[in-house]
Length: 171
Image 1 (cartoon, rainbow, N blue to C red):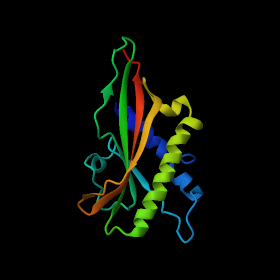
Image 2: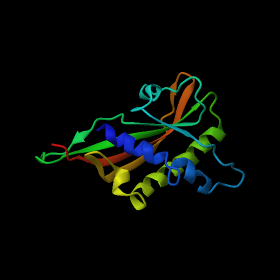
Image 3: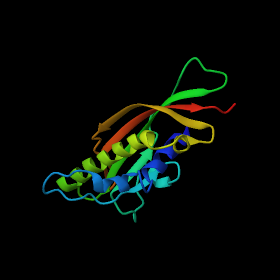
Image 4: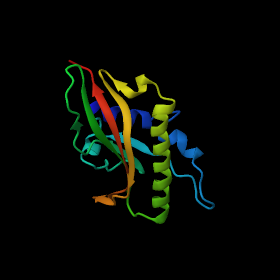
């Protein structure tokens, strides 16, 4: 359900509870510097992100949000609703040489992503978790990985897969 990634991407961009708003509050180890703000692109509204790429003029780092796995529809189907388990992939990507500083920035940024996603439930409202007739029912899992996916001159160095039970109440 395409609404799922829109809900997540919109929340991660939020000026109060999104990634860039929370980055300054992330505790750093002595000697580490504050990670730079990120641009958040989602595959629903950005053609490059849909291909797992970044526009050539895009500043990095970037968070790429997309649904890259199968939706698992929940049986038995209720005549009034359609439930599915959907996993959203949230990747930290950078252009050019990858250094230890970039890897540290990615880890700190992923911590801000997880905090933001937690706030979607602790301070977010139903309206934040709903698009039309589709809403996030609950989170099923959060898993952080280190995919190390080179795509041209861009490398996805960190990712979080977050699973949601999603409900569509349209007829």
